Image 1 (cartoon, rainbow, N blue to C red):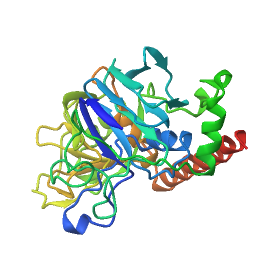
Image 2: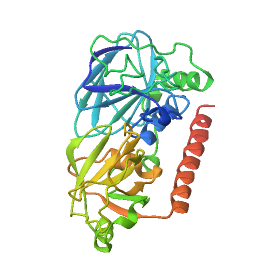
Image 3: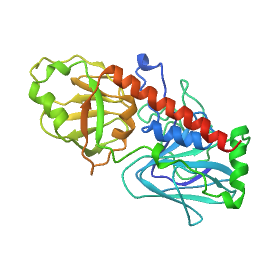
Length: 325
């Protein structure tokens, strides 16, 4: 694959785990659910590296026929002028061009059968820009980059390719709307954070009864959400404590700071909550036009919701591969 035009585009996988004691963030997909669906559609393991594209047009050419899928939100796609639907597997032939044009804020994932074969760093191909690790020399992709992709399809991938090579089958297989991420959802569930009790009853009520809008000041590290001021009753200074993707901090002016994939390993603002893993993709894909509402759930509910999501993905994977057998 040769990159011809790139807005903000990086190579990502599920992340770099087990290195937070070294100060290395997890990184990885901002929207892991969308990326997992893209890898499912292309016959990959869920951790296969994909391209995460945001903020700007993207185009690439291919030297061989490849099995691809686009997931997430924010873009429209074309091959040689033909519109390409999201959440469908499709083939691009040698010499053809894939073009993506932004239509709204969001992260789009380009999955390729076999994954993007960049060199792993600390067990992950994810790009972390601040430390210049992973991906393509630890930086965003740029025009002229050539990315290695597999040319040896495995059994599942070959079945999908054989099916799509029949002209009558183009775009006739894709995921049902019932299993796609609902990016219109405005409710984000969270569990209480370590400093939850530092806030007044009024502030805790406002957290769940008010709407919060993400600001334009956002990136892969996190986003500031504007809303009513959340006042503290405990005003002592907090020593730096562990934070994670999904941690909800409260700044000195009472506004929310939500951390995402490239979140630092420690922070000094009080942690009022932690977005549950099953909903983190919705918060990451939220645009400045959205207003989010937070709902507290128990740890047990958070675990059950994630388990349910993973079970659904596993069943979907079984059904999808069975379709081509």
